[in-house]
Image (cartoon, rainbow, N blue to C red; front, side):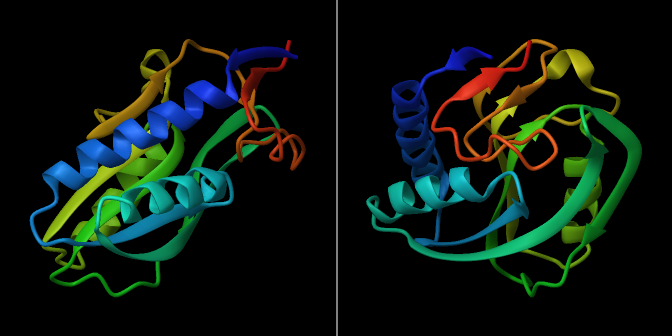
Length: 168
C-alpha cells in the first residue's frame, strides 16, 4: 500500500470544507445525508467540524452500492427513505468515480423537494466520469487509482485506516 493522503491532510481539508459549507448555508440548519458505508468516517468528522461553526446539523444515511471488489458493476442499487422537503440538504459521499451513484441519488432526492441540495465528496476522480456530475464541494482530486482507508474499503477491509492509500 502507498499513502496518497495523510491523516493530517484529511483533517485540514475537512475543516476547510466545513468553513466553506457553513458560509454557503443560509438558514443555520443543515441536514446531512451520507452514503453508507464508505462515507461514515468522513461524515462524522465533517459533522463535528460543521457544529463548530454554529450550524444546527442533523444526520441521516442513504444506502447505495455499485462496486464489487475493485470494479463498478455499472448498476446503482440505492435505498432512499428520508424526509427532506423544505430543508437545506448536504449529500455527502466518500468518492465520486463514474458519477452514476451520486447523480442517481441526487435525482431521487430532488423529487422530495428540498429547499436546497448540495453535494460534497472527500475524493473526486474526474478521469473516470461517465455522467455529467460535479460535486459542489470537493476535498481532493485524485487520478484513476483504487484507494482505501478513511472509510473506503476493498471487500470490507481497510476502512479503519486514518489515511487514504492506494492498493498497488
